[in-house]
Length: 618
Ligand SMILES: [Zn+2]
Ligand SMILES: [Zn+2]
Image (cartoon, rainbow, N blue to C red; front, side, top):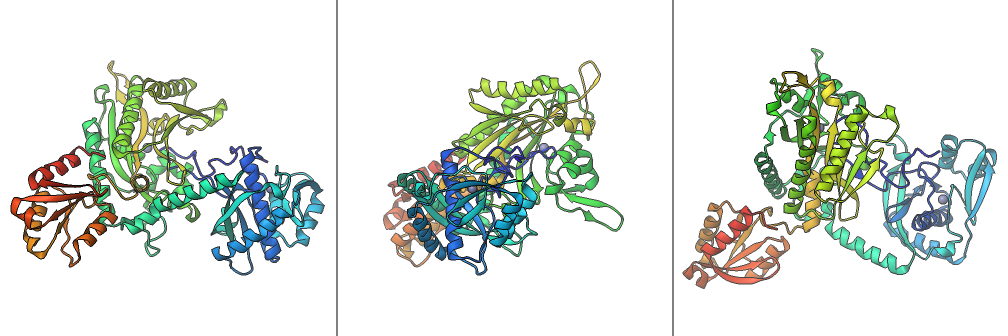
């Protein structure tokens, strides 16, 4: 019955696809069947949450007897249940549903497990008009025994386990309403998904609701709009964000930082097109193994077929092969912030975190087996350096290795051993703790995933180091060894800062708009106290701009206090206030975004900000 997916983990997470950096988000509320596709769990919180989902469905069926219920699994921090209502409901209806849930709690209804014959189960759900459950029985239940749970009149197809009685459910709250396709399939009817949360104690619930409130404030989708950083517009399409001027400024700074640092570390930055002939992706294997995420090819009258690239690897391989390479050229690190196109299903799109076009801080390192360990180490060091400068905290590593099922993996046992050892040794030599995910490697080689969490504690992969034995074979890659023989290089796919979109969403939530000065779209606002200081204010701005700082002069006919407040709301690092005294002495009165105030000469202020920016201080 189980598909072998660990309970409540990574459906839609780590994918085994073609070669190349695979964008992964571990979203813990992907649709799961309550009958079968998530393994029964004894974790008390999960049992509690799943039981609360039943309670929700029981309450809904009492209030809306015509509704049909779909599935109701536990998810990270809570649960949901999907319903088809005859009349649309909204968040304003949740209060009444919650009251009914509390009434059922007080009635102390036991959760009763029964095993029905297939015939009995079909009759029961048919009597209730529950078509979705009938469909699940037809598709999911093998054999003649059907496991169900009863809570009063409410009957659910379920393997349990559950709490003893509804009275055990003490601390829950319904949170929101969303649309969700039946069984996650866009061709199937859209249902109404009600999300809730449930905890062991009222204190835990309270803490969680506070956390949620804080997370909402930090949510990058909300802040992105408020701070005018990016938008998503239906006319352009879902999952295709538009970077507004301030967002684009931050991205440009990030890209310069990344590219300059990589150049300093011996990477060769290239530019390659977003499309290639479909043939190229057939050779790489993506057209066969990764088709689900690729856009349909563009067909032309002369028979040519072009494809938007889902990964950059094949283009970089073509660059590697543009010349005969010798051992002296290795390791060769070809890098690009390359645009990738992946057709993610609309239900899985998530702000900037999961999009349909993104720019990856990508590199492909071609090296000898002896160089592998050093290159892995260098890749981790670079990712750590980026994290340090950007303030990425609370991350963890997973080393994904192969298991013993031989036919699943490409490459020889010895290659795998060597590559896995290199990955682990690299992390250990750098004192970096890691966990091992046995059997979670890509089929073409082992990898290290660098996991970070967003404001909602959703874990996602921000960068990875992947060893690949497959593409060098498929493309017949070679280098001339010291003895003149032709040898095959190893290929390492490596993302250090990850996708620009995902990195940006992380930084928005991390800094809640108060970006470090080097990244902030406006570094200084000059505020003249009266119009008499306008000329001096412009002079201050010119001086700062001559140092390549981003400066605005606030010439609005507003009071000074208002201008300061507005600047603080935009989290602008510095406001330089200039009155008659400042103009006379070539000084500025500086107010930073936390409210500290200090008087300084224009020159020392200018050099202080310029240094802060050049050193990319946090
Ligand atoms: Zn790649
Ligand atoms: Zn259940």
